[in-house]
Structures are given as C-alpha cells and as structure tokens.
Amino acid sequence: MIYLGAKNLSGLSRAIPDGRHECNLYRFLSKPKWDVEQVKKTRLKLLNRKARRALEAMRRKDKTPRVYLIIDDSLVEKTGKKMEGVAKHRSHKDQNKPILGHVWVTAQLVVAGYSYPLDWEVYRRQAECNLTGAVFISKPDIAYKMIEAYNPLPDTQTVVMTDSWYVSKNILALCKRRDFHFIGAVKSNRKLKIGSHNQQFKNWMAVLPKSGLERVKVKNNHYKVWTNTHNATLSCGQAVKILINRRVGVKKWHYLISTDLTLSPQSILERYFIRWEVENFYRAAKQILGWSDYQMRGLTAIENHVLLMMVTHAYLEIQRQEALEQAPEDNAHFTLGDLQRQHQRLAQRSTIALVFALTQQGLSLDDIYERLAA
Image 1 (tube, rainbow, N blue to C red):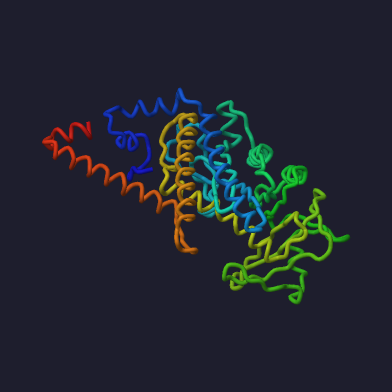
Image 2: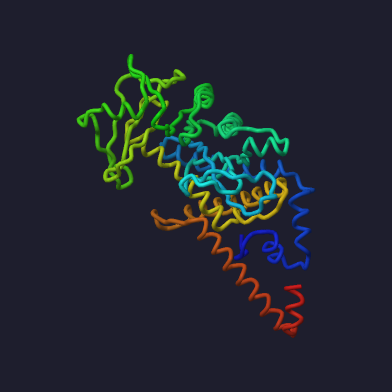
C-alpha cells in the first residue's frame, strides 16, 4: 500500500527492510503456511459487517436498500509466456487484438456506498487447459458459480448486472430462482419475441417509428430510448423489459434488458450505469494496488498475490467510507488513491522522524543506514 514502485516480488521485497531475499516472499505466496480461505472469509466478513451498518443507516432514513452484484472480467496483460494460465485473449480496448495475459472474472458488490469484489477467479482458455490438463470452465459458468454462492445481505433486493457476454439462459434462470432482478446488455443479433413477431433486436430497431422514441436525461446526458409496452420474451422464455437506447449525438444504439418489468427507461439506465463501479475498481487495482505487476510463474503464487491486493483494497475502501462519514461537507469526495497517498505520506513522515530520533541518540549516518536499509 505504501510502496511507490512496481509491486512485483523484487519491488515488494525492497519495501520490507529486513534484509531478506525476494525468494522468501515467493515462498510466502507460493507455499503459504497461512490459511488462504480464512483470509478470504475474514476480509468478506469485515466488509459485509460495514455494509450492513450502512444499510441500517439507510433504513432509518426510509431509503430502500438495494444491492448490485456486477459480473465482469478484465484482462491483465503479461509478457511471460511461461506463466501458468497465461494465454492470448482478445482485448476489447484494442480492437479485439490478441493480447497475452490473464483474464480475471469478478463479482463486484455495490451496496450503500461501498464497492468491493465479492469473488474473483482467473479464466483459462480451453486450448490452454487441454495442454496443461486443467479443467475448463467457461466465463458464464464462472459467473454462475459466483451468483449461486452469493449470500444476500438481509432484507435487501439484489440486482445482478452484466454485459452481453454473460446473458445466458442458465444465469437468467438462476436469478429468477433466487428472486434476484437482472439488468444486462444484449447483442444486436439476440432474438426477441413481442406478440407473434420474433426477430433480432437490430431488426426491431429498423422498424421502430421515430415517434415511438422518448428522450430522457441521466447524469447530465440526454438519451433517445424505446421500451416495449407489450409483453416481450427472449428465446429462452424469460419475460423482459427491453430498452433500445443511444446517447444524443452518438450514432451507435445499445440494447438492455431488465427482468423487473416495472422499471421506467430512466431507471433502467440509471441502474445499469452503476456497473461502471467495476471499471473504477479495475483501474485502481491495476494502477495503484499492483494487480498488473505480478511476475511469478506459478498460478498459486499469482492468486495469493491478487488475494493480498484485495485485502489492501478492502482496507482502503473501508477507510474511504469512514472519511466520507466524518467529512463536514455533504459533497465530500475521496478516492482510493487519496487514502493511499495519505498512508504513503504518513509512512514517509514516520521514517524521517525515526532517522531524526536516531541522530539525536548520537548514531552516525552509516549506523542508521545499516539499521534501516540492511
């Protein structure tokens, strides 16, 4: 959290002033004597406890508690071809260019101001699994496991949100069985049935009259939208409310579905935009917490590196919420980076204070260096 350089084994070992070799840190990650599952449970227990307290505060103000479970994935680019689980994946941010790396599927929980990963798992391509003998699990199947394992916070309504990759018959059925609402993007070639007509979303868009479009405002942006007034079902039989939309000034249309048939077009857009929270997490995790810095070959060590990064994130997220609660201004804003920089400044101040105290005791510069940077 306080180290300013790259958070790989070499960098992190330099940040620990005990004179030990980085191999010790690798053994700590690859062959841990600590209980990995207990670390995960303790982390989640603490976050959920904080979230429950925030939910209770919301209820006292007569606000409706709603929990968003966001499924997404992110590519962590790597250069080492001998890393376990590494493969070439198409990067959406680079025009589907094949990029070497790991893809991590995550389940992000957004509740009462808190935003934190519930679970995460590295996705391994089938070709890579065939070569190594690993069991292949598709991205939708990983997402299914995460949603199935989720234990809802008491007296809350869960809304599962995904992009078009994860909208499957099984996930929709799971959400229905668990009484979760679902909001997700769908591809333009997905089929939709309204009345006796069954055709792709893009074909529905082609026949819509301009008079049927509404104009709504969400977060200072205006959107043209169309939603169905008659019953609509997907090919799997799931009843949905659909939202065909595009931002004013942008030509590309987007397609959303909601299993909550009571929502207005504006409400569907507002809730779906909460999905951006997972992108904020990815950016912070990669840029300041070291998610993309690992260089180990073994997947066990990599997964434990990511786990400790998640623990660091949880600590900063809790401190961010406490800072917001204590701020005198109602519109105060703190980022994870703000809290991390604060800890870095405190660490630097402590080091300077220690050096000053040692000089007051009469130690020479060489003695202080030997003591602190051995």
